[in-house]
Length: 446
Ligand code: SAH
Ligand code: SF4
Ligand code: F3S
Image 1: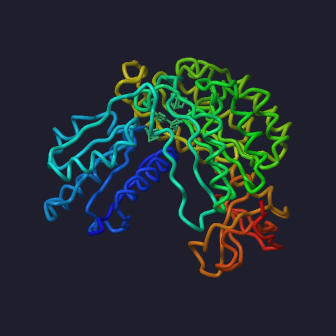
Image 2: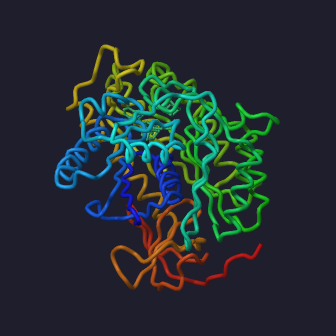
Image 3: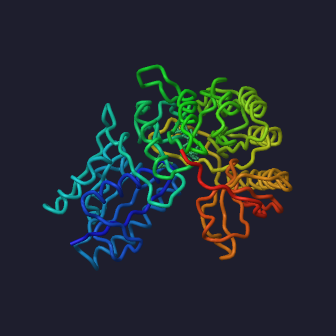
């Protein structure tokens, strides 16, 4: 009898892709997917622990699952991802309805873990770190009809930013072999994928752990030579690892999209040093200048944390000054969240929640002005858009993304989905653009 898996993902794009890998592994052993948790035989929460709020979301979902399992005792409940890695055994001790915990280095073991629970009913916890992470080479092919696919190129992080749990939960940096990444991109291109998103916690240190001396820029040049891949994106980059060779890719690799997510975290050198970020604001601004020189239309987005322990009004003001100077296209901004096990956890000078809240609101309203200003500057221009689907707000419209990663809605129908089209931008909003379809070209044949 066919069994069904319901999987809910929390956190970053790396976790989203890990869920795709889990789905593929379970599909191989006969589990179909269901979007309705009530019809599932197996439920997996793929969790995140980056901030307390992310962990809270998982706990409240687990509360609902406890109730569901009371009504359906045969249901198998598993927890994966970063919170699973962090809590390990504690999950099954404190929440006896949890049947298994699968850590970030053990995804490839998922089918065996589920089989063991099915056969014995005994909880399984697999959270050991391994020297070589087998799951790094797991491949999850996107469903038919998709135009964009994730590809893991490295995993883990050696940077130990003082506030961040990721290095503790994903382990040491490890890059995938150059040939394996290229092979995967070629297979994807043969299946109609037009856009690849290269994933890693710090993609621009790609190659540090592989043989052959190929670095991230070499990888971009190589993928850039695969004709059917129209767009290359990547996330995330650490400013300290941006070399001139990578900057040059933005003018030399045609398929590399004009967008970079480059987390700055703070505008204060004092705070950056405490965060162990290894660059100054002047150095960050120099990188931005080089990127804009190499690629004048580049969209630059960032992450900023407010209220790091010891952050004064002066430090925060420096963040605002930096934002006014750089003018990001958009920013993900967060209140500092204390995470056990990180270097910042024990620091004195914790900033009160009310102050963090006020700083966040100030920062976000300034960023909204900048985002709208950037979006408005695009009106009148003709943009290349790959159509992703029917718009959420109107069945008469479709939406897609520009190369700079901005969402555009315009009149169009189902038949345009997956097509690369030219759209004239007519209106700009905070979270999207509106335009008029000018023309479309068919899928480029390889
Ligand atoms: N590897 C990526 C970021 C991963 S986490 C990189 O280095 O760019 C995504 C973002 O979450 C970080 O850039 C940071 O802004 C934020 N973040 C991480 N830990 C945090 C914490 N303890 N409190 C608040 N925000 C945090
Ligand atoms: Fe966390 Fe810093 Fe590593 Fe990013 S680079 S994952 S913020 S430790
Ligand atoms: Fe969260 Fe882990 Fe990603 S903590 S942000 S799921 S690497």
